Length: 123
Image 1 (cartoon, rainbow, N blue to C red):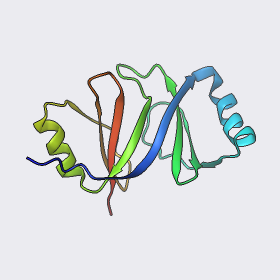
Image 2: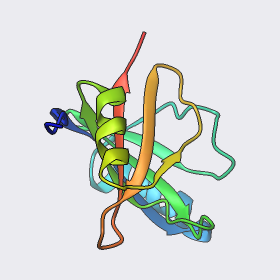
Image 3: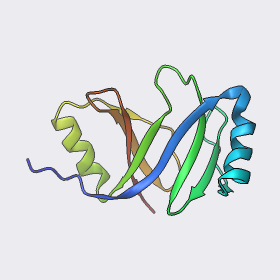
């Protein structure tokens, strides 16, 4: 089986801050970093904020999010189904994530404990 993973771009980066500093982080990324806040889908059970940063998004969440960290980088791919099959074929455990309208997505961990997300925009 040939590797079907074809990456289009980095879609977003998710960083985390302590819950009591979430508003401070929001103001820092608006006032100091000059980012534009955007609407965050109402599908998550934890607070957070989304911003646009060049052609990617910055997502700010809180830790801890049990049992897995919310910190990750998300990559847009051209074929999410083929990507899923390839990773499963290679013994990678996949995790389903909350549904975000217009995005098919899942996460997994590399062998070194780094959480990664793959997604494809769908109509």
